[in-house]
Image 1 (cartoon, helix red, strand yellow):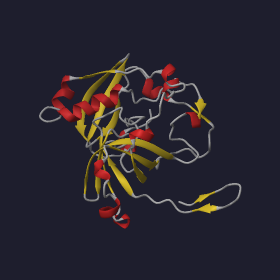
Image 2: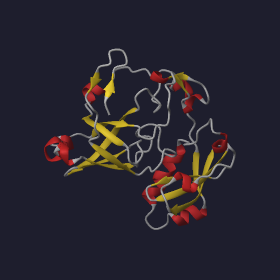
Image 3: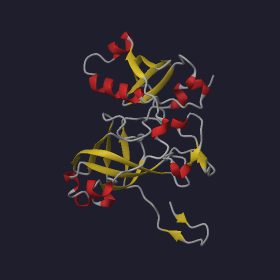
Length: 249
């Protein structure tokens, strides 16, 4: 894409993705709202050949974490809204630049990911908060001596803590995960613990509503009653298409 200054009309060089993320999260619903909320989440990033990964990735494996600059390719906002509704505010509004909402003038994301390893042209990552298919624009190594702020303030966030859900699995769900599903079980629990529901969506917030989301190659079915999320079943995903599965009432 070409960036253009509205006032001067000056155009800046085109942005190109260096690779596309292969993430365990297959849709926006269920994807963590911040990095490291789900430590067991995994992703791979293969660097495109045009960027000569044999040379451009040299030395990166010596770092434990990397910053990922991403493009929110599924962003649906058509107009700029100076105030947005963060989930923590439960319907309240805050300035978009005082938030990390994906609905921004330019849909750019910044995520800190744990770098598990580098193999050839591919980065293996964990603790991610990005959906499968996200274009990655750049990678930068995390430097603790300069990237860690001294005596930081978190603004309005500490006063608006997002309550965690207690997560339980039904006998059917436990059976679905029997025989090697322990890692997936932890991933499901951590994903649901932070309540993926949109508090402004009455359908999602209805007590006991049957909800689903894609995770890895599975479709996770759950419901929430009070402060408890119950995983009812975990099935092999037939199609990674929300429209195929979720119909409006």
